[in-house]
Image: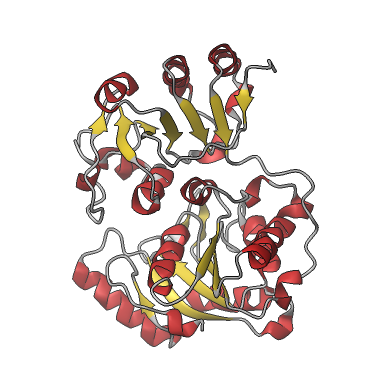
Length: 364
């Protein structure tokens, strides 16, 4: 790698003008085919505090992000090309805002990313496959001395977990799911929004989207197996020493029920030693995402499995609430399913985006 290449260099996104790039995945038509693909863009648009000046999507028919995400308060324009967005906004950071299966950069992204590097953009990527492994991208980054922040690359010298977070006698709330890509990040941030009104909170970012939002963190699914739980433990212990928050919220990953992503879910449970679990469920999801052979398991089955997975077992950790993702349902349908699941489980249940409830008293 040439000396001019600034690969995997953290980029402070404050005081920057930022574009989110989604290829052709952000629009309503695209979401009918693959609704979860632009979830990184969705999370950043909802929760990041920095200056997002536009979104670039070549196929999106909508002109503004609020036409797709109506819960957003700020209107952000959608452009067809990075060039047009650059001319209109003078942006200097380009964030890749999709989470494709397998984490490879789509081939049709390459030329656009090269153009961005040639025109004074630094890049932020959460892809599993590093941008620096694409010779064309690496060459242009070196030639133009541009930064590429690969947020998924973990730090060196991660510890092996040893249940040290158990010694923190504070609430550690972990979101879990009946499936992957179901709304754990959104639920985590909505819970934090409520708790921050009265308490000093800390989010533990464990995936690419939350790392981009918070500006720090470790993508647990990119760590070697023996160190995944240790990465979670490390983040919590370091924040306890430096910031001493009242309550921790750990962003969940994967699902114990998913054949591909259960290892990450287990690592989060063992590394965090959570005191409370919040289960995220999407009623309209009938089959495990990416694995139609498997049905989404019954909520009570997942609750039992999750509670038994927590170590040390004497923590007696319980699922204390059910957060539903009722996207695709009418308000009345959503209200009906909330009532049904509340009766079935005996637990507080709502869709925290549609019908927010303050659950902080469940944790403290």
